[in-house]
Length: 399
View 1 (cartoon, helix red, strand yellow):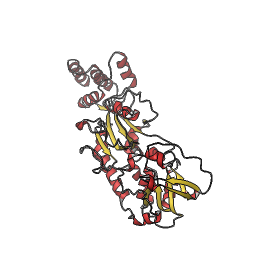
View 2 (view 1 turned 135 degrees about the horizontal axis):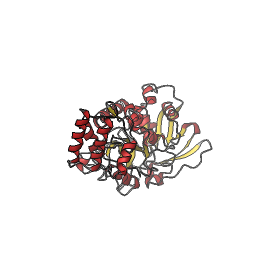
View 3 (view 1 turned 60 degrees about the horizontal axis):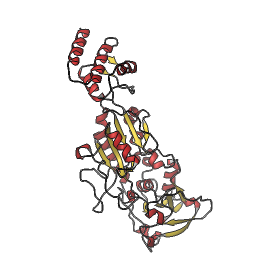
View 4 (view 1 turned 120 degrees about the vertical axis):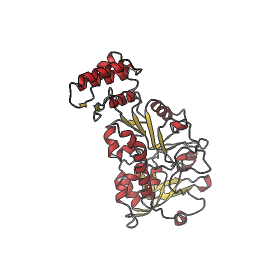
C-alpha cells in the first residue's frame, strides 16, 4: 500500500511545476521511507547523489514543506549542507579582546537556539561568508554595533547573507564614528519596509535629534542583561565598595579626547606606572579633564573575563566609562554612570539614561546629581524573552 502511494506521489510530482531539486528530494524521501521505519534521517549520500545528477539545491524550504505535506516525518536533529532542513547561524563580532562583543550573541542565553545553531558561529569581521546560504536557513545577526553605512564591509556581508537566507536582527545598533552619519541605512529595515531582515530589533533609543523610519522597532535590549552573573548580583552591589570611582575604559577608543571626537581609535599606551594620567574627554574640548588615577581604580575592556569586569563594577561606588557595554552593565548593577570620551554614535542612542561629562564641574558634584538606576536589567530581560518568543521561536518549529 505504501509503495503504491509513493509511486502515485512520485508520478504527480514528475508532472508538477516544482523545481527539479524539490522533486528529487521528495521522491528520494519517499523511496527512502520504504527502507526505513517512520522517520527519514537526513541522507547526505542520497542528496549528494541527486545533486551530482543535476538536481540543483535552489529551493530548500519549498522542498521541506513539500516533504512535510506528503506525510513523511523528516528528522532535522542532524542538519548537513545537503539537507532541506532549516539551518541556524549566528553572526556577531567574535572579538576575544572585547568581552562585550564576544558575549552579545543571543544563542548564548537561549538553550533552544544554541541547540539548533550547533557551532555555526560566524564573525562579522573575519569570516569569509563564502558558505552556500539557502532560503530555508535562519541567520540571527547580533547583538552589537554592526549597523554601518551601506558600503562598509560589514554591511555588504549582512546584505549578501540576507538576500539568500531568513535574517533576524537582534540587538543591532548604530556604530558610526562620524557625526554626519546618524541615520539608519536602508538595508536595516524589515523586508516589508524595503530592508533585508525578516524581523528586526534595534538596541538604540531615538529622539528628535536622529532620523529613523518609524517602522523600525527601537530600544530593543542587548541580551547580555540575561547573563547569570548580572542576575546573581541583583541588589547586592550597594555596599562594600573598594573604590569611590571605578574607571572602566575602552582599550582602543576613547583615551585621547580630541581623536575620539574625530572617530579615531588607537590602543592605549602601555600603562605600567601608578598613578595613571588619563585624559577624560567630554562632548567639547572645554569639558576635557586630566586626572591622576590609581592603577587599582582602572580596568580596561580587553579583559576577556566577564566575572572580573562585573566584580570591578560592583565594587565601585560610581563608574566612569568609555565603554558601551560598561555603561550597560554598570547601570544593570544599579550604579551611577558617567560616559567620557564618546567616540561613536552608539553612546548617543543608548537605551539607558546617559550622563556625559560636564564642563567645569567636579566628578563628585556630577555623580551627586545623577539618580540611581532601578529595574533596567529586569526590563531588558523581559524584552529579550518576548523578542525570542515572537520572532525566533516560530522559525524553529521546523528545525
